[in-house]
Image (cartoon, rainbow, N blue to C red; front, side, top):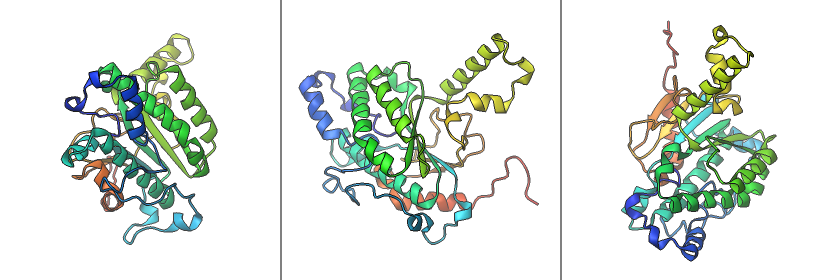
Length: 306
Protein backbone atom coordinates (compact mmCIF):
# COMPACT_ATOMS: atom_id res chain seq x y z
CA UNK A 1 0.00 0.00 0.00
CA UNK A 2 1.00 3.60 -0.37
CA UNK A 3 4.20 4.77 1.22
CA UNK A 4 3.99 3.00 4.52
CA UNK A 5 4.72 -0.58 3.51
CA UNK A 6 8.48 -0.57 3.83
CA UNK A 7 9.76 -4.16 3.55
CA UNK A 8 11.37 -5.26 6.80
CA UNK A 9 14.30 -6.79 4.90
CA UNK A 10 15.24 -3.33 3.59
CA UNK A 11 14.93 -1.51 6.91
CA UNK A 12 17.99 -1.16 9.16
CA UNK A 13 17.15 0.64 12.44
CA UNK A 14 20.80 1.33 13.29
CA UNK A 15 21.13 3.48 10.19
CA UNK A 16 18.31 5.80 11.21
CA UNK A 17 19.98 8.28 13.57
CA UNK A 18 18.75 11.88 13.52
CA UNK A 19 20.89 12.99 10.59
CA UNK A 20 19.91 9.97 8.55
CA UNK A 21 16.24 10.61 9.23
CA UNK A 22 16.59 14.15 7.90
CA UNK A 23 18.36 12.89 4.79
CA UNK A 24 15.65 10.26 4.32
CA UNK A 25 13.08 13.01 4.66
CA UNK A 26 14.75 15.05 1.94
CA UNK A 27 14.88 12.00 -0.30
CA UNK A 28 11.33 10.94 0.36
CA UNK A 29 9.21 13.91 1.35
CA UNK A 30 7.07 13.44 -1.73
CA UNK A 31 6.20 9.88 -0.73
CA UNK A 32 2.81 10.55 0.82
CA UNK A 33 0.02 12.66 -0.63
CA UNK A 34 2.47 14.95 -2.46
CA UNK A 35 0.47 16.16 -5.44
CA UNK A 36 3.00 18.68 -6.71
CA UNK A 37 6.70 19.33 -7.25
CA UNK A 38 7.71 15.78 -8.31
CA UNK A 39 11.39 15.19 -7.62
CA UNK A 40 13.54 12.94 -9.71
CA UNK A 41 10.71 11.00 -11.24
CA UNK A 42 12.19 11.08 -14.71
CA UNK A 43 15.30 9.20 -13.56
CA UNK A 44 13.10 6.63 -11.85
CA UNK A 45 11.29 5.81 -15.07
CA UNK A 46 8.08 7.58 -14.07
CA UNK A 47 6.62 10.07 -16.49
CA UNK A 48 6.32 13.46 -14.83
CA UNK A 49 3.42 15.50 -16.15
CA UNK A 50 3.19 18.86 -14.36
CA UNK A 51 5.16 20.61 -11.69
CA UNK A 52 1.91 21.35 -9.91
CA UNK A 53 -1.58 19.94 -10.15
CA UNK A 54 -3.45 22.29 -12.44
CA UNK A 55 -6.84 23.56 -11.24
CA UNK A 56 -9.70 21.55 -12.73
CA UNK A 57 -11.91 23.27 -15.28
CA UNK A 58 -15.43 22.51 -16.42
CA UNK A 59 -14.14 21.51 -19.85
CA UNK A 60 -11.66 19.07 -18.34
CA UNK A 61 -14.36 17.54 -16.16
CA UNK A 62 -16.50 16.80 -19.21
CA UNK A 63 -13.69 15.08 -21.09
CA UNK A 64 -13.71 11.29 -20.85
CA UNK A 65 -11.63 8.76 -22.78
CA UNK A 66 -13.39 7.02 -25.64
CA UNK A 67 -15.52 4.15 -24.40
CA UNK A 68 -16.25 5.58 -20.95
CA UNK A 69 -19.76 6.85 -20.29
CA UNK A 70 -20.34 9.68 -17.79
CA UNK A 71 -23.64 8.23 -16.57
CA UNK A 72 -21.88 4.97 -15.64
CA UNK A 73 -18.93 6.48 -13.78
CA UNK A 74 -18.55 5.35 -10.16
CA UNK A 75 -19.22 7.98 -7.54
CA UNK A 76 -16.77 6.46 -5.06
CA UNK A 77 -13.54 4.63 -5.91
CA UNK A 78 -11.38 2.98 -3.25
CA UNK A 79 -7.78 1.96 -3.91
CA UNK A 80 -5.29 -0.36 -2.22
CA UNK A 81 -2.09 1.00 -3.68
CA UNK A 82 0.20 -1.99 -3.43
CA UNK A 83 3.64 -2.67 -4.84
CA UNK A 84 5.82 0.40 -4.25
CA UNK A 85 8.52 -1.59 -2.46
CA UNK A 86 8.60 -4.35 -5.06
CA UNK A 87 8.70 -1.77 -7.85
CA UNK A 88 11.79 -0.18 -6.32
CA UNK A 89 13.44 -3.53 -5.63
CA UNK A 90 12.89 -4.66 -9.21
CA UNK A 91 14.73 -1.55 -10.40
CA UNK A 92 17.55 -1.83 -7.88
CA UNK A 93 16.34 1.28 -6.03
CA UNK A 94 15.61 2.08 -2.40
CA UNK A 95 12.07 1.62 -1.04
CA UNK A 96 11.78 5.40 -0.70
CA UNK A 97 12.18 5.72 -4.46
CA UNK A 98 9.21 3.40 -4.86
CA UNK A 99 7.15 5.52 -2.51
CA UNK A 100 7.95 8.70 -4.46
CA UNK A 101 6.98 6.96 -7.69
CA UNK A 102 3.82 5.74 -5.98
CA UNK A 103 2.92 9.29 -5.01
CA UNK A 104 3.28 10.42 -8.61
CA UNK A 105 0.87 7.62 -9.57
CA UNK A 106 -1.55 8.77 -6.86
CA UNK A 107 -1.27 12.36 -7.99
CA UNK A 108 -2.29 11.35 -11.50
CA UNK A 109 -5.29 9.34 -10.26
CA UNK A 110 -6.42 12.25 -8.09
CA UNK A 111 -6.29 14.55 -11.12
CA UNK A 112 -8.23 12.07 -13.25
CA UNK A 113 -10.90 11.61 -10.60
CA UNK A 114 -11.40 15.38 -10.47
CA UNK A 115 -11.58 15.70 -14.24
CA UNK A 116 -13.83 12.72 -14.84
CA UNK A 117 -16.47 13.47 -12.23
CA UNK A 118 -15.61 10.85 -9.61
CA UNK A 119 -16.69 12.39 -6.35
CA UNK A 120 -14.86 10.34 -3.69
CA UNK A 121 -11.47 8.63 -3.75
CA UNK A 122 -10.46 6.60 -0.69
CA UNK A 123 -6.89 5.38 -0.35
CA UNK A 124 -5.44 2.93 2.19
CA UNK A 125 -2.31 4.57 3.59
CA UNK A 126 -1.48 3.06 6.99
CA UNK A 127 -3.14 0.00 8.50
CA UNK A 128 -3.58 -0.73 12.19
CA UNK A 129 -1.46 -3.80 11.44
CA UNK A 130 1.46 -1.51 10.55
CA UNK A 131 1.87 -0.48 14.20
CA UNK A 132 3.90 -3.65 14.79
CA UNK A 133 6.72 -2.26 12.66
CA UNK A 134 9.87 -0.84 14.33
CA UNK A 135 9.17 2.39 16.24
CA UNK A 136 11.91 4.29 14.41
CA UNK A 137 10.28 3.45 11.09
CA UNK A 138 6.82 4.45 12.28
CA UNK A 139 8.09 7.73 13.71
CA UNK A 140 9.80 8.56 10.43
CA UNK A 141 6.73 7.84 8.33
CA UNK A 142 4.33 9.76 10.55
CA UNK A 143 6.71 12.71 10.55
CA UNK A 144 6.83 12.49 6.77
CA UNK A 145 3.04 12.47 6.59
CA UNK A 146 2.86 15.54 8.81
CA UNK A 147 5.39 17.56 6.81
CA UNK A 148 3.80 16.70 3.50
CA UNK A 149 0.30 17.63 4.65
CA UNK A 150 1.68 21.02 5.68
CA UNK A 151 3.41 21.59 2.37
CA UNK A 152 0.45 20.49 0.23
CA UNK A 153 -2.38 22.31 1.98
CA UNK A 154 -2.32 25.29 -0.39
CA UNK A 155 -2.33 23.05 -3.47
CA UNK A 156 -5.21 20.96 -2.16
CA UNK A 157 -7.27 24.05 -1.42
CA UNK A 158 -6.53 25.59 -4.83
CA UNK A 159 -7.66 22.42 -6.58
CA UNK A 160 -10.95 22.31 -4.66
CA UNK A 161 -10.08 18.96 -3.04
CA UNK A 162 -11.57 18.12 0.33
CA UNK A 163 -9.36 16.00 2.59
CA UNK A 164 -10.75 13.64 5.21
CA UNK A 165 -8.59 11.40 7.40
CA UNK A 166 -10.16 8.25 8.86
CA UNK A 167 -8.80 5.70 11.30
CA UNK A 168 -7.81 5.34 14.94
CA UNK A 169 -6.10 8.60 15.85
CA UNK A 170 -5.32 7.63 19.45
CA UNK A 171 -1.71 6.70 18.66
CA UNK A 172 -0.94 9.58 16.31
CA UNK A 173 1.40 12.35 17.50
CA UNK A 174 -0.28 15.53 18.77
CA UNK A 175 1.56 17.60 16.17
CA UNK A 176 0.19 15.40 13.38
CA UNK A 177 -3.32 15.58 14.80
CA UNK A 178 -3.06 19.37 14.77
CA UNK A 179 -2.07 19.36 11.10
CA UNK A 180 -4.84 16.90 10.20
CA UNK A 181 -7.41 19.12 11.93
CA UNK A 182 -6.11 22.15 10.05
CA UNK A 183 -6.19 20.44 6.65
CA UNK A 184 -9.69 19.08 7.22
CA UNK A 185 -10.93 22.48 8.42
CA UNK A 186 -9.41 24.46 5.55
CA UNK A 187 -10.69 22.07 2.85
CA UNK A 188 -14.05 21.14 4.39
CA UNK A 189 -16.08 23.24 1.93
CA UNK A 190 -14.27 22.04 -1.20
CA UNK A 191 -16.55 20.22 -3.60
CA UNK A 192 -14.64 18.96 -6.66
CA UNK A 193 -13.31 15.77 -5.08
CA UNK A 194 -13.22 14.28 -1.60
CA UNK A 195 -9.98 12.45 -0.91
CA UNK A 196 -10.31 10.14 2.09
CA UNK A 197 -7.01 8.90 3.50
CA UNK A 198 -7.16 5.88 5.81
CA UNK A 199 -4.41 6.16 8.46
CA UNK A 200 -4.26 3.79 11.43
CA UNK A 201 -7.30 2.15 9.87
CA UNK A 202 -8.70 -1.33 9.46
CA UNK A 203 -12.12 -2.63 8.56
CA UNK A 204 -12.35 -4.61 11.79
CA UNK A 205 -11.42 -1.53 13.82
CA UNK A 206 -14.10 0.47 12.02
CA UNK A 207 -16.88 -2.00 12.82
CA UNK A 208 -15.65 -2.35 16.40
CA UNK A 209 -15.63 1.37 17.09
CA UNK A 210 -19.11 1.66 15.54
CA UNK A 211 -20.42 -1.10 17.83
CA UNK A 212 -18.90 0.59 20.86
CA UNK A 213 -20.49 3.89 19.89
CA UNK A 214 -23.91 2.32 19.50
CA UNK A 215 -23.54 0.37 22.76
CA UNK A 216 -22.74 3.60 24.58
CA UNK A 217 -25.83 5.26 23.13
CA UNK A 218 -27.96 2.34 24.33
CA UNK A 219 -26.35 2.57 27.76
CA UNK A 220 -27.04 6.30 27.90
CA UNK A 221 -30.68 5.73 26.99
CA UNK A 222 -30.47 7.57 23.67
CA UNK A 223 -31.71 4.58 21.65
CA UNK A 224 -33.31 1.19 22.24
CA UNK A 225 -31.70 -2.08 21.15
CA UNK A 226 -34.57 -2.62 18.73
CA UNK A 227 -33.66 0.59 16.92
CA UNK A 228 -30.25 -0.72 15.85
CA UNK A 229 -30.23 -1.29 12.08
CA UNK A 230 -27.85 -1.02 9.14
CA UNK A 231 -28.49 2.69 8.74
CA UNK A 232 -27.52 3.35 12.34
CA UNK A 233 -24.32 1.34 11.97
CA UNK A 234 -23.51 3.24 8.78
CA UNK A 235 -23.82 6.50 10.71
CA UNK A 236 -21.24 5.29 13.23
CA UNK A 237 -18.66 4.08 10.71
CA UNK A 238 -15.61 6.21 9.90
CA UNK A 239 -16.92 6.78 6.38
CA UNK A 240 -19.78 8.86 7.76
CA UNK A 241 -17.63 11.80 6.64
CA UNK A 242 -18.86 11.40 3.06
CA UNK A 243 -22.17 11.49 1.23
CA UNK A 244 -21.17 8.28 -0.56
CA UNK A 245 -19.80 5.88 2.10
CA UNK A 246 -19.99 2.74 -0.02
CA UNK A 247 -17.35 2.43 -2.77
CA UNK A 248 -18.71 1.48 -6.15
CA UNK A 249 -15.31 0.19 -7.25
CA UNK A 250 -12.28 -1.14 -5.35
CA UNK A 251 -8.96 -1.32 -7.17
CA UNK A 252 -6.00 -3.26 -5.86
CA UNK A 253 -2.69 -3.34 -7.69
CA UNK A 254 0.30 -5.74 -7.67
CA UNK A 255 -1.66 -8.91 -8.43
CA UNK A 256 -2.72 -9.59 -4.84
CA UNK A 257 -6.26 -10.96 -4.61
CA UNK A 258 -7.48 -9.84 -1.18
CA UNK A 259 -8.96 -6.76 0.51
CA UNK A 260 -6.52 -6.79 3.47
CA UNK A 261 -8.91 -5.62 6.20
CA UNK A 262 -9.97 -2.51 4.28
CA UNK A 263 -13.53 -1.12 4.45
CA UNK A 264 -14.99 -4.54 5.28
CA UNK A 265 -18.55 -3.33 5.94
CA UNK A 266 -18.53 -0.79 3.12
CA UNK A 267 -17.35 -3.26 0.44
CA UNK A 268 -20.45 -5.47 0.70
CA UNK A 269 -21.59 -4.76 -2.88
CA UNK A 270 -18.48 -3.11 -4.26
CA UNK A 271 -17.15 -4.23 -7.64
CA UNK A 272 -13.57 -5.50 -7.32
CA UNK A 273 -10.77 -4.98 -9.83
CA UNK A 274 -7.35 -6.59 -9.32
CA UNK A 275 -4.56 -5.23 -11.49
CA UNK A 276 -1.28 -7.03 -12.14
CA UNK A 277 0.73 -3.81 -12.35
CA UNK A 278 2.62 -2.58 -9.32
CA UNK A 279 1.14 0.70 -8.11
CA UNK A 280 3.74 3.07 -9.64
CA UNK A 281 3.09 1.47 -13.05
CA UNK A 282 -0.72 1.59 -12.79
CA UNK A 283 -1.38 5.12 -14.05
CA UNK A 284 -3.92 6.43 -16.52
CA UNK A 285 -4.17 3.35 -18.73
CA UNK A 286 -4.68 1.04 -15.77
CA UNK A 287 -7.33 3.34 -14.33
CA UNK A 288 -9.18 3.47 -17.65
CA UNK A 289 -9.09 -0.34 -17.84
CA UNK A 290 -10.55 -0.60 -14.32
CA UNK A 291 -13.30 1.89 -15.14
CA UNK A 292 -14.08 0.12 -18.41
CA UNK A 293 -14.42 -3.15 -16.53
CA UNK A 294 -16.69 -1.51 -13.98
CA UNK A 295 -18.96 -0.01 -16.62
CA UNK A 296 -19.42 -3.39 -18.32
CA UNK A 297 -20.77 -5.06 -15.17
CA UNK A 298 -24.37 -5.46 -14.08
CA UNK A 299 -24.87 -4.44 -10.48
CA UNK A 300 -27.87 -6.28 -9.08
CA UNK A 301 -27.42 -5.78 -5.31
CA UNK A 302 -28.99 -9.18 -4.63
CA UNK A 303 -31.81 -8.78 -7.16
CA UNK A 304 -32.25 -10.15 -10.67
CA UNK A 305 -32.33 -8.30 -13.94
CA UNK A 306 -35.43 -9.06 -16.02
